[in-house]
Image 1: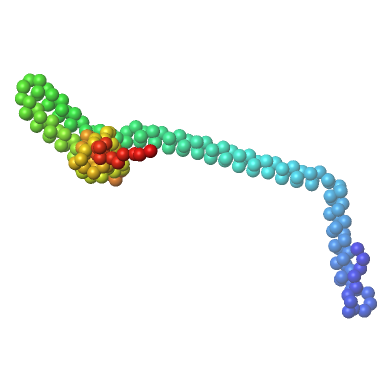
Image 2: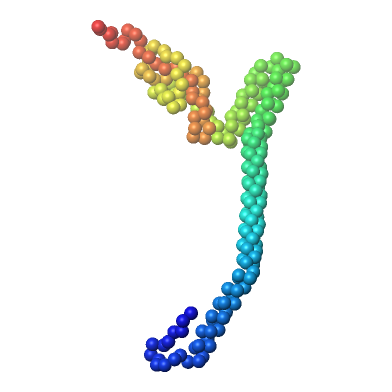
Length: 207
């Protein structure tokens, strides 16, 4: 490396600067000599870095496997809990119905011993009333079709039509079976008979 002279200084550089430059050159030559004398030192450093990177990659891979196993176990647990819930979701509802089964069995047993039809009818009526109240606790309610109201496909199901002059066409003539709602949703529509104009009242079709 050449000697650098200060732009604003006349004459040769000071002795301290010359010594400093000579010292820096010697350090560079020493380092270069060490590298040339021991090239395996650089290779060893690269090998150590590679081993460290491999160990780090293995650590992340093992961690990924553990997380995958934990996720699979969690999925299995959720699936088991869902199956368990679906299996016993109606447990409380069914338990509420058991007393009515008991009452009906007792009524039948009583009817077999005595020919008291009136008492049997009363017992069945009471059992049915209690049964319907229990259903209401779970949001299930009955509804009946009203004779004369307009047929509504959302709550009615027409089982047949009847020609009649007593009701407008499309009106409910008779209710055949009660409908049920579960909360706000129609669980089963009411079966009805729908009015239809008699053939003689219908306008004739001309070609």
